[in-house]
Image (cartoon, rainbow, N blue to C red; front, top):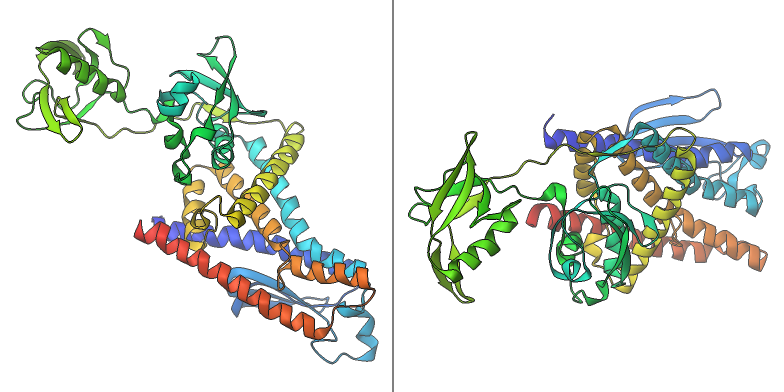
Length: 453
């Protein structure tokens, strides 16, 4: 399946599932409260399929899957026969109306926990939390290549994804964070403090690890020659496919080791031996780096480029038994909810760029396709995050969203009477404007992040 078709398909699957659960929450509680539901629609626009059930509800699947709605009997929207008045939404007590409206976001939160439970039971393959190349702030803090990151702060990090996700909020807040490390697989655990307060004021949130100077082991580039520049120092000496194992008797483990050794060799002057593996044989080849002068002063080069590396097989598995997965899913859902609320706060206060926090359908579709390609567990983890996001965003106190209706009902509880029709109409216009602006921002971010960059 092509990336385009795959992205569209998984977007429809993801949004269809999340919207159905959200609207089913409203539907189920409304029916339990004695409200007559006229229509249950997944999607907007022209109906692709519809059927009227025995309960009199019209069930619809519409053309545009970017949402849905549950239409209930309501005297404010239509004339109602006297015998059906007690089934109207507006005739129910304020507490019943609160329960009906809150049921949609609640369904998404419950779905999030269920999806996380399924992910943990299936098992999500990942990479071990082992450090590769270290430089900058990370090196100054005492991290070393080969260290296993056992925890970031109080959060255990059984895989590299947990390390990455735990470091992002700390970096955005410029908060120093303790790391629990272990050298190799059997070393004694030690603690270091990662001074993220020293990060510059402007960083690219999408490249947090690069800003810290930390790279995972599985992203390390092997010291394999991919190309030799004609006329360079390595031309006629090294060949494509050579694996460099040592330079001037100093072992080379990955591509990043080569640069400093070549500079040291150039400053020393003269030729040196470069040891390589070629076609199963070990060779010692004599080479002398060439000097290249630039704005930053002289530097020495061999004239070789690395071969494009392939990611290794995943070597870690995040998995729990069916019973242990229950508290793990609850804890993870709670943690993600806290991080999402904190991220919304950062966006409102300007501590994080909004183009990196508000995703549109194109970004979601591409993410859904990428996660689905990694297996069921990864796709479930994305669905859980999207379901959580849908639930929390719907609780924002913006008219036309569930949170806006809940705000009206809370005001009604305090003042003892419903909010006036005029105030609700004004609120609807404000809410529509805010939602339209949010959607416009999402589409703008899609264009910038997926088409321009």
